[in-house]
Length: 341
Image (cartoon, rainbow, N blue to C red; front, side, top):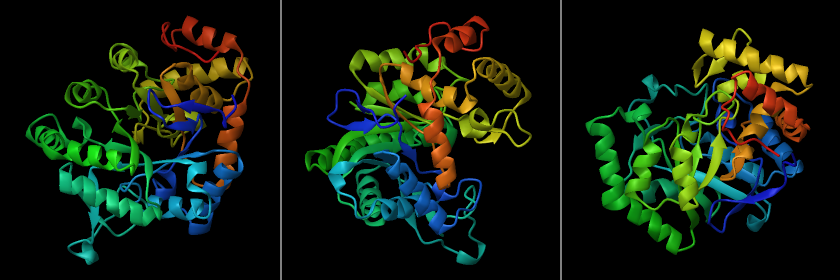
């Protein structure tokens, strides 16, 4: 696959390279990343023709946006597609001496405030503008409004109520002012997608975990519902937090936690099929989601120039159709999962 080929995000006017740059890693997810190395990762993506960059206030508590903006500074704004997220704003910690930046290895010394109200959306958006050093976002993703963060009771319903009562109006105003071009939702788990479809007219979804080589459950109902409405999709975490890039290694992570024995066994099976066809596991993981016609891009993260170069090479690796057929025959991939041509 050509990482620089462009696709349109659903029925929006936003186009993006089908391989993007995910900004969580340069926010120091799991490991520290020196400033020069993070800058080099962004520039390595640019030098390889990547023109879609995604970040968030949450990534490194502001650090990822600062580094993404630094890496893109000097480039013409119309030459790249940029997305960030809303639903959180940052403030100085109440007690700096006891502040913890977890789960980030480093990141900025900022406390996070979840806020999906009109004022919260506007405050978070303005903070992102300042950290990125830009005026306009191509996509603003409503971030982490799901039961992974708020459970399934009153707290989740409260934040959905904030969005419906006033937060959505803020996003519509930003879109009308051409400060954002599309309104999307970022999700980590199954379930919230359908609730959003019933609540507001979203343009796109960023699906961070539920559609990978290890999980295609969203093909049951969520993705068909999106396709019926012309809603575009971006796939985050195509490596499933790492195990689909590194394979079944001792430190393998899946869904932001140590991989279970069941997941490890499945990855070993997928890896064996890939080896028989001379295909790196990472190549299959990166290219698989783009077989779905609603998917516009995948956005693997990179914490160094070398890691970015490896992802570009994996994305460009030629995969024979027989690999997908064997994965389905072995029960390692859903029979109805669309695969790249």
